Structure formats: structure tokens, C-alpha cells
Image (cartoon, rainbow, N blue to C red; front, side):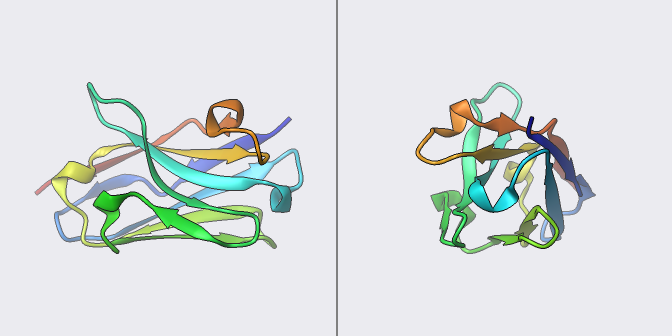
Length: 119
């Protein structure tokens, strides 16, 4: 059974940076496509960034080059480096792991980590 544990959220000032990490256990990390999603109060959960097992990446338009997703197969970990953070980035960030071609909704989710951008 896949388990995902996120780390790295917190409070940061506008313009600051945070790095989120998500560790996968209980299965073979290299088989999974990984993604970061976020959900702000009163809004639907949305995709932030995704990375395939082979390392191909994709980003939401609102990322605008500020965020970078990466993965370390030796550590079973996916990262989200977030730079130039804005108050609008405030949300709970969730890690997702899915076995292609299944959609993310049929994958596994972490418990979420809160990111708050405020002065």
C-alpha cells in the first residue's frame, strides 16, 4: 500500500522560497508519475506541477517559471522548489502518486502540508 508523507510547508514572506518534499513508501517509486496539487480555502484542488517516471515535467500556467518539480529515485522523494512566492500561493499542498495510465484521482494522496505566504 502506497504511503506519501509531505514535509516543508510553513509561513514565508512574499518573495520568499520554500521547498516541499514528499516521500513514497510501500511500493516502487520509479513506477509512479508524481504530482503536486494545491487547494486554497473555498477553491477546488488544482494541479501545480507533475513529473513522469522518466523525469519529464509539466507546470500550471500560474507557476510562470517560479516553481520546479524534481525527483530523486534513490530517496523515493519528489520535491517542489517554490521561489518568488506570492500571497495567492497560500494553500494546502498535496503530493500525488499514480500508476500510468491511471488518472491522479485514482492514485494515492499525502496528508497535505500548509503553505502560507504573508507579511
